[in-house]
Image (cartoon, rainbow, N blue to C red; front, side, top):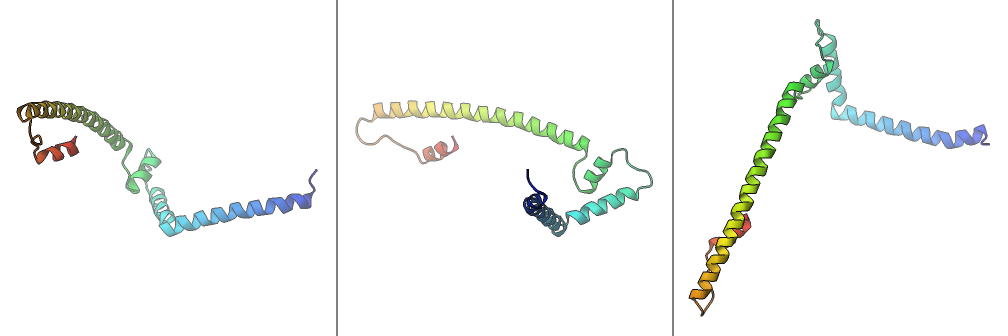
Length: 132
């Protein structure tokens, strides 16, 4: 069984380490302005004659965040934009596939027409490859 002095010897450094971390975090919040901002918002809430139905929404609004309804609208917009992006990406991939098929058929027909020399190339081929 551990004696009291041994327990204190092992426990005090752990407590000191935790206190040091708390103090560092407190200093971080103060230096970043978070404590002042939260204090101002809470004071404003306290000074409201008619308290809002949702204290959390009041705080979010005062700190510059969207309300719950605005957040839901933004989420719906993100969802719609993701669907549009996926559709455009699928269309782009299909067009790139068709372009590659056309290039291959053009290259094959050019090789058949010219047995001597290099097959003709265009300056836009490199650009098209970068897009697809």
